[in-house]
Image 1: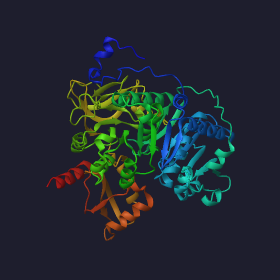
Image 2: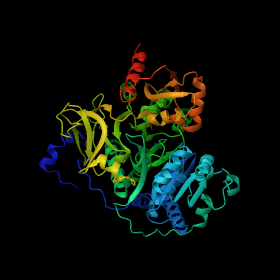
Image 3: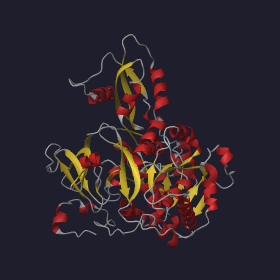
Image 4: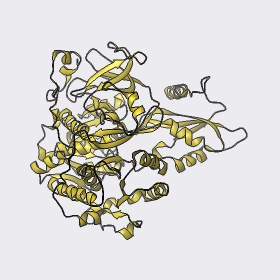
Amino acid sequence: MAPLTPDVIARRPWLDKLDPAVPPSINYPWFPAHELLRIAANVEPEKSAIYFYGTEINFWDLQLLVIRMANALIAHGIKKGDRIGLMMPNCPQFVITFWAILHAGAIVVNLNPMYTAADLIHIAKKTELNGIVTFDGVLPTLKQMLKEIDIPFVMVTRVTDFIDGTPRSTREDLALEPGWHHFSEVLDASTNVTPPQLPIEHSDPAVIQFTTGTTGTPKGATLTHRNVVVASYSVNEWAGSILNLIPVPRRTVFCVLPYSHVYGEVCCMCYGIISRSTQILLPRFDPDEVMETLAKFKEITYFPAVPTMISAVLNHPRAPELDLGKKFGVFNSGAAPCPPELLKKARDMNIFVAEGWGMSETTSLGITNPYIGLKKDGSIGIPYPDADLKIVDINTGEELPPYERGEIVIRSPLVMKGYWNDPEETAKVLKDGWLYTGDIAYRDEDGYIFIVDRSKDIIISGGYNIYPRDIDETLIKHPAVKDVITVGIPDEYRGEIVKSFVQLVEGASVTEEELIAFCREHLAAYKVPRSIEFRPQLPRTGVGKALRRKLRDEEIAKLKK
C-alpha cells in the first residue's frame, strides 16, 4: 500500500471527495486471482453463488466444480501459460471455466460470441491459441475458423446443460467433430478435488482482452492476476459505501453484461465472488426477459450496465409495478456516455446510480462518480484508489492546469501489463508507467474529469466498441462501392448507431438493403450499419483522410431540427 505522503495527497486533489467507506489506498493481497473464489467458498460455503433460470450453485460446490475442471484441463495437456479462448454467453459453464483456466495456470482469452470467423482467426493467430471452450450456438462459425487454423483443444457445451430438469446434451446432439470434447463428459470424468498447486505469480497473465486501437487493428490487453485482484478489491470497495451495508445473505448482482468482456467479468463476476453475492445470470439482454427475471427477486443489490440497458429497464412498461427504487441497491453505468436525462430519471426513481469510465487496458475500471458523495453533471467522476491521473498536452506531453483540454494519462495498479505480443503498440501507450488513453478531457479544481472528445474514432453502440474502419473495409469490397466513410450518430437508446456514407462506382446500382445484407454476411451483427446514405462524393482532406467529424456534425444538426 503506497504511503499517503504530502506529495501524494497534493497530486490527488479528489481524495476528500471519495465516499466515506472508500479508502484512499487499498492493501491488495498478493495472491493469484482464483484465491478470491477459495476465500468466498470457505467463508460462505452454503450461500448461492449462481442463479441460472432457477438452478442454483452454492459457493462450495462452485469451488469444487472449478477445481475438477482445472484438473481436467491439466489432464488434457493444458499447461501454464497456454492461451485458452472462452467463447460463451453468461452461464454457469463460463464461470466454472474462467476460474478453472486460472487455476490451471493458463490464460483466458475473451472471445465475443458475436465474433466472425475472420475475427477469431486473427485473435487465434495473434495469441497462438492452445484451446477454445465454447457452446453449440457458434459451432458454424467455429468450424469455418478451424478450416484455416488448428486449435489443439476444443470443448463444447450447450447453455441449457446446467439448468435443472433440462435434458443434458450429448456429443451426438452437438455433432462434435472427432477429437473434440464435451464439457459435461470432461467434468464428469474428473473427480479430483485437490487444487492444483501450481507456482503462479501475481505478475503472470490471467486474461487477454482484445480492444480496438487507433489503427483499427485489434490488440490484446494483457491483464495479470494482480490486475484482476486489484480490480476485484477496487470495485468492492467503491460500491461498498452502500452495498456493504447490506448483509451477505441478501446480496445479489444482476449479470446481463457479457462475461466475454472484462467489464462484465470484473463488475459482475469478480464482484459477485469477492462480495459473496449471488450472480443472477442471463445469457443475453432481452428487455422483457430482464424484467421478468427482476420480478422474481425482492431486491437486486448491484446492477452494472450500459446506458442502453438502463434506458430499456427504466422505460419498460413494467417498471412502475416493480418499484425499482426499492428493489435496486446500486445501478452502475459504464462503457458509453450516459445521457444526463437518463441519470436524472434514475435518481427521480430513488435509485442510486453513478456513471464511470474505464478501458480494457485498465481492467475496466479507472474513474467513477461517488455513489453517495458529490456528483457533477457531465463528469465521469474521480479516479479509483491508488491512481494518479494527469491531463497532458497532446503535443508536448506537459501536464495542463485545471480546465485545459488534453489527453488523459493514468498510472494505477489497474493498468495492463501491455499488449500481447505487440511491443511496438505497447510502447505507444505505456510510457514511464503511465497509460496514454487517447481520450481528451479536462479536470476541474476538485479533480473531477470531464470527457470532451475521443482521439479515436470508435463508435460506442449499446456498450460495444465499433471501429468504423471495419465497416469501411467490408463495404469497399462490394463491386458497386467506390468509397465509404462510416460514423457514429448519437442515439438516445444505444448511445450511438452506425451509419455509412457510400459513393458508388460510376454506372453501378445497388440498394441500401442489399449493402446492409452484404454487411451481415461479413460483419458481427453489432457492427452492421443501421442505415446507408448514398452521396456523389465523400468529404476527404487533400491527402485522403476521411472527414468523419464533418459527416457526424451534419447528422447532429439534422437531429436538432
